[in-house]
Length: 127
Length: 152
Image 1: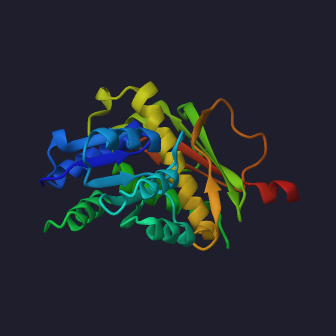
Image 2: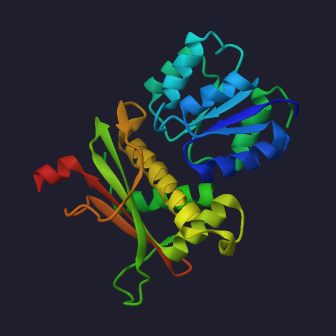
Image 3: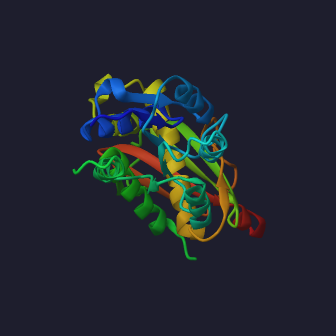
């Protein structure tokens, strides 16, 4: 799969687990990038083009919702597919994130197959 | 909404199976005196329509099994102080979210804190708790409702 993916999660072990699933979806290692919070993710976006962001919400420094607001302010939210991968289940907050431009969400704990399917769907590649 | 020890057990079993491919079962702490000691504990707080904390304690072997399940590597390749504690924080984060959801979080606004490793559990009795076993290694999960504390 010819796309750059950014995994944003403050848990290194979860980033590693998600990275494995992204690999399974067909994204090569050198196209998978990581960030530990929203600010680090913005820094990554300053240096490389990213097609898909897999975003945790509950993070230190800059949380996922603040990150999405920043993307909208910079007018890049429509160019980057953002998928929220988090423990968040509140419908109102998830709707607010969709209104800000988030494409989809996946609730933790998730089945790896569900994340793999979501990645291929979002990136427009048949699984 | 009714939320008891059985509800908590079901949440834990589902979460660990999905995130770490780890099958756990409820166990009775009174059946044996040969329990492995807890290696570490972590806590997450939530506030909003429901107020409280979830505290998770695990034996060293459980942390190794859980981290190896999440990463898909052998337990021998895991550092309990690095991946083990990271796995503990993450399962605490997930269980905090699951408890909140079971209490009605889908329809009611609330906020979770960041999970943190703690030195000691709260000194009050939990609202619900359970001890889970995975091949002799143990996980103890407690939910403390702030409302319940006030009523006690």
